[in-house]
Amino acid sequence: MPAQVVQLPRRRARRPTGSVALDAPQATSSEPRPPSLVRPLPFLSRWYSVDDWGRDETLIRALGPLAWLRWDVSVGGQQHVPPSGPALLVANARRFSLSTVYASWALSREIGRPVRFVGRPDIAPIGPFMRRIGALLSSPAEVTTALRDGELVMISAKPTNHPRLVGAIDHELITGAVLHSTPVLPVATVSAPIGRATRVEVGPPVPRGKLRRGPLAEVELADATQHRLQKMLDELGGSRTGVAPLDWLGES
Amino acid sequence: MGGDLGSRVATLLEAEAWVGSLVGIDVDPPRRRLRRAEFHLIPTHERDRMVDVITEFNPHVVVHLSVWEPESRASPRSAKTYTAQATTAILGAAAECRALEAIVHRSGTEVYGRARWAPTRPDEATRLDPTCEFGRTLASIEVTAAAVAKRAGVAVGAMRLAPVLGPHVPSPLGRLLRQPMVPFSALADSPYAVIEDIDAARAFVAAAARRLDEPVNVVAPQAVTMLQAILRGRRIPWPIVGPEWVLTRQICKILGAPIPDHVLELMHRGRLADGSRIEELLGITPLASTPEVIDRLHAWESVVRIVPDRSAVPGSVA
Image (cartoon, rainbow over all chains, first blue to last red; front, side):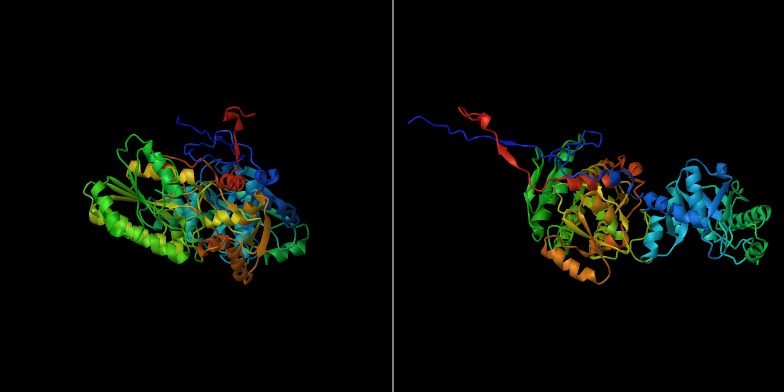
C-alpha cells in the first residue's frame, strides 16, 4: 500500500492589530507601531499627564484663572534663572501668603520651565493635590535629588508676620545646592493680605563665601541668602494697594 | 528562564557575543524558542537538583530572576515561599561555583517603601524601608545576595525594577488596568512609573555584560496616575474612598483581578523612582516611556484570532 501524505490545511496567523510580536525583543520605539483597537483618547495623550515628579501642568493651567483672581503677579529678574540645569530659589514668606505657590507658578510661566516648590504635607488629600501643583516634600533628601536631576526648586524662609522681614533659612535644605555646586538665587516676594498686586523679584546668584569642607558651607550660605533677601525687600518697599489704611494694615 | 521575562532575557543573552554557553532553570517550560540555551525543568523545592545543575555548569555570571510577584502567578503566600526556595537554592549554589564573577538579581522599587515622608523619587542611595510584603521579599533577596557576594568575593547587581508590564507578563497591575471598570483612590490619585518587559530584559543583559556591582533603578521616564491610566485606556473609572477598599478588593478578586497589597500601596501612595543612573551604569535607556507602556498595555488584544489559510490546500478555493 503506497504511503499517503495527508496535508492538513495550514493555518495563517493573522497579526492582531496592536499586538506585539512575541519574538521581537529588539523592537524599538522608533519602529512604526501597528494600529490598535483601543487608542488612547487624543486629548489625553497630548496634555493630560504628569511629569517625573507628579506635577500636572494641565491642572496648574486650569487653576490659573482662579489664582489670577487672588494674585496679579509681576515678575522681575527672571534673566537670572538659568535656562537649563538646576538652581535653588529661596523666597521670603509672609505667614499664610502662599508665596512659594504664586512665585513658582509665575516664574514657571515666565521662563517656560517647571519650578517646583518645597512644603507639601504627606497626607491625603492635601499632599497628593499639592504634588500635582508642583510641590515637593520639605526634606533635604528630596531637594537634593531634585537638584541632581536638574530641576528648579524653590524653598522658603521661615514665615514671618511682618511682610518686609525675612525669616531664618533652613540650612539643611541648602545642602543639596552646596554638594552639587548649584546656584542659589534669592527671590523677594511682596503681597498684601487684601489686594491682588503682587511682586516677585529674582536676584543674582548669592556668591559663595569661604571654601568649607563641612556643613558650615550651607550655614554661611543660608545666612548670606537671608541678608541678600532682606536687602532686596528693603529696596522693593512695602505693598502698594492704593488705599493707605490697607497698606498700613499690611505693614503691621 | 521559563517565565516571560526570563525567556526574554535568555533570548537576548543568546544573541550576545560574549555569552558562551547558557543554562536555565525554571518551574515552567520556556515561552520562547531558545536555540543555544540548555533548559532544566526543576520545581523550586528540589534544591539538590538545582544545586547539582548550577555547580556542574560552573557559570561566570548568575542571573537570578526567580521572583514571584504576589497575585501574578501565585497567591501571596505561595509566591513568598517559591521565591524564598529559589533564592536559597540558586544563590547558595552560585556561591559554590569557582568561576563565578557576578550575580545579577531581580529586585524592585517596592524595596524603598512608601512610608510617611518617604522620598517622592528615591534614588539608589535611599535606605531600604519596605512597607509591603513584596517589598520585604525583594529586600531580603538583596540582603542574601549581598551576603553571598561578599563571602564569595564577586560582584552583585540588584535590578530594582518598576512594575513590569508586557503583553504576556503576568502582572496584577496590568490585569487590573485592563478590566472594563477600574478602581482608583479618589483622595490620593498618586503617580507611578512602570517599565516594559523588553526594557527590563535589556537592563538585565547589560548588567550581566558589565558585571554590575551596585543597585540600579530600572524605571521608564515620565509617570501616570491611576485615573490617567484608566482614561487613556477608555476604561470606566471607579472612585473609591476609605473603607470601600475592603469590599472593592474582594469584588476585584472574584472578577479575576486581585489587588495585592503592593498594588494597593501604589494606588494610594504612588511609586516613583529616580532612574537617572541607568544610562551611566548600564549604558542603555528605556525605549518606552511610562504613558507609552500604559497605551500599549491597553492596545494588546485579549484573544489572538487565527484564521485558516485555505489557499495552501491543493485544490481548494481561496
